[in-house]
Image (cartoon, rainbow, N blue to C red; front, side, top):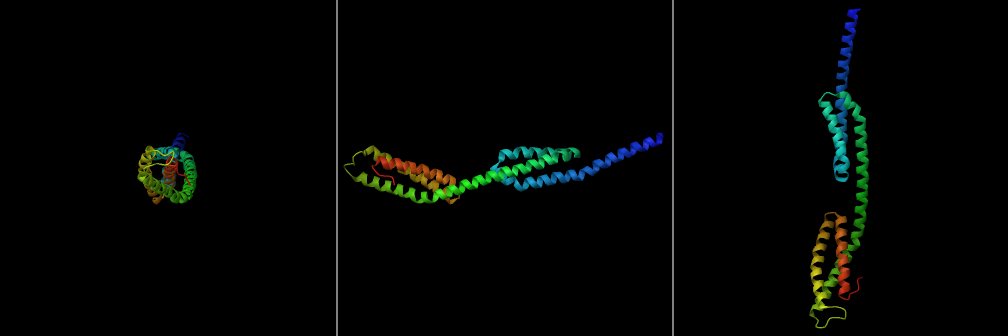
Length: 199
């Protein structure tokens, strides 16, 4: 009976060891699979949802630590949550990307008319300033200070418009439109100060 008990203990020990060994391959596969899944979306996640990427990285790091320590059961237990987190991260990144793409498309549409309209306003102001600078008597409501201010503002507008054009050329229409709107607002105010009617 005693001999039988010893054999039972040995068998159980062997079974436990075998179980541990049997868990190693699935644990390694679970970590590799999670790494592959996260790697596939990392670039977009980093760009559109960096705040959501950090905790997922932490979860995966914990899995790898347990794998290195031989705690395969903990790896397998964590795998479903990690995979779910990666899937959730992908959804977040995809949604943020879709929002960014929509905003970019909207900005691109807005840029097209502005790219024609704003330069015309700046050119009109330049012509008006050149003309007023030569006249001895300024129109009613227009002062020398208005003309001097317009000259200064013109340089600022031209510089800002150059930045807007460069942004558009690089595909950053959101920045381009933002800068162009600033120039347009300045141009509108300057035209009023010079007795012009903004179109």
